[in-house]
View (cartoon, rainbow, N blue to C red):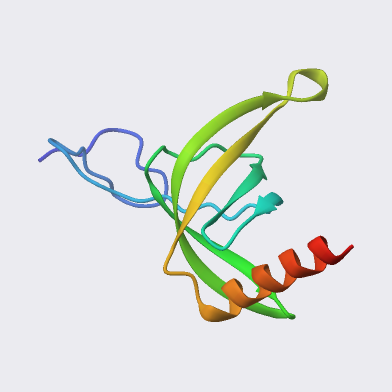
Length: 112
């Protein structure tokens, strides 16, 4: 196999056929609403429909990881032509601490 001309710092080879990979980006997103089964978040980046996405939530000062599935994606225009995305996420087996915090939040909201 003959490498192509531009190899920058190291030797690279052309890929023939399918080669799978994964790209993980970490971006902060705002939670618009939440329930014990999922959340609607406002994100600067879209996510693939039906994909599995890891979330890092802060619960009582501790970071908790939650797996979620993207159930819907809606593009939302904002100022100066910029875009944001509303992502509907369904939690996959959320930790008890997350469920309890959401239930407590709901109880506090209903008592106000």
